Image 1 (cartoon, rainbow, N blue to C red):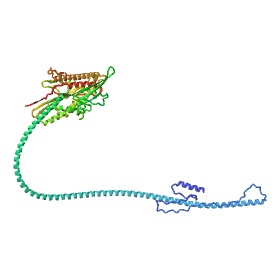
Image 2 (cartoon, rainbow, N blue to C red):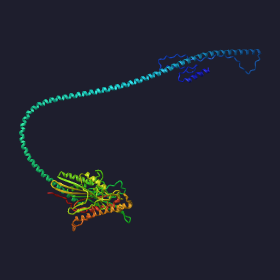
Image 3 (spheres, rainbow, N blue to C red):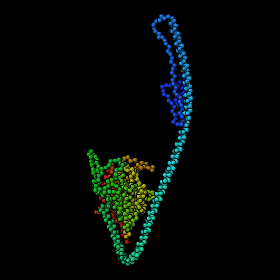
Length: 639
């Protein structure tokens, strides 16, 4: 029996995926019958045998035994003991026979159980085979189901595509129907309009027939009117001739008014003074690390006054405060733009076209903004006085063209470097030609020998020439400015005009950018290392060259001051003033009394440059107090 149970448990462990087998003996667990497969609905449920029952053990008879006691043996006689032994023997035999009967019955029950087990195993094998077949059938049905699902999905997609195609065809047909309906509607509208047009033409034709009769009558009336108009035209022709005569008279009056306007305009300039001085303070740059000087501008209405303050310590240790007040024709603060500055000098361009000589020059120490004021930057807002003045001249000549004037403009550009004149527009190298300044006191004209003079056609042409000349101009580095102009540049614009009445005029516009003015101890003081040395030149040689440049610049500026002083004394009149000598030969930047002159004084806002600024302001005051006489118009009438 234990062998049978062990065999059944081993079979259970080996077949984990098979249905549970029925236990050989009944126990406390309920008997679970096999459930039919869900995937095999067509299989009949197998008939399972009834569950086994646990056999009852045989009822063994209990032999009667006598309990031993501690009492002393009885005093029965021996025959009684012999009977007791035979009884025990009989009981023992009966018990053994009962046991043998139980064993036989148990063996019989075991045989029956073994038969049942064999039958259950056969049923189990049959059920396993049926289960395997059912699983195979289920797998087959699943494969069939998957194939059918794929086929159904393909049919659905095909059906969807066919539906989309049909929808597209339907939409296309709808659009075609709408287009046809729209064409039909338009055609009906056109037909209706044509019918209306035909009806209108018929009405018009009837009206035209009536109008023709009316026009015939009107034609006769108009012929009579034409005869009257011929007489009126003759009268209007006479009036037109009279009107043309009046227009000619008005034109002459207009030319005379233009002449009077020029005269009054130049009178205004003369009332302002032939030498005017404008002072301009440049703004503080991001690269400026020094302290800003104390500058104030008290005159907020006319902007003609500038005040500088400085403080120093005396030998006694007391603070000494000094105030310097200067008044000029115009003072521009650092916030003034290039357009604001040019607005004050634009009237001088008109003087050039009227036949007057005009000179505008910039003066100031290195780094004070002279080149920026005269030449400006690359944009329209930062354009300097030179390009703006040239554009003003071209505009003035174009305006005068409608009044019968024709102008030709010529330009030249030169520099004065170490008292040597260089042609900036020439194609040759410097120092190849020797240029000299010639002044004719009879005609009050000044010219330079062997200089390149080019015809100017437009402001753009002038800008190109200025850019070309700037690349050839001498520049170098000093302690005051890393790129300092070391030469004077003079741009001359000559204007010649001829009117239809035979009047001619000649004007000249000189735009001068002077070199930086400062003392030697400022430009080449302690710490100067000969910046800009190159080309095989040593630092000492470069320093000597820069010192020579500064000496030449200061010498020429000093000579310019002498010329202005002499012209002022000559223009002031008095004893011996008429024969006063003007030292033109001492300065290449000479001025004559026959010009309208404007000086731009450029100042640096830094406190470190205060002494140089005061020197420039004193020189500008000297120039502003100079009277060089009234400018004369260079014009004549050709008979």
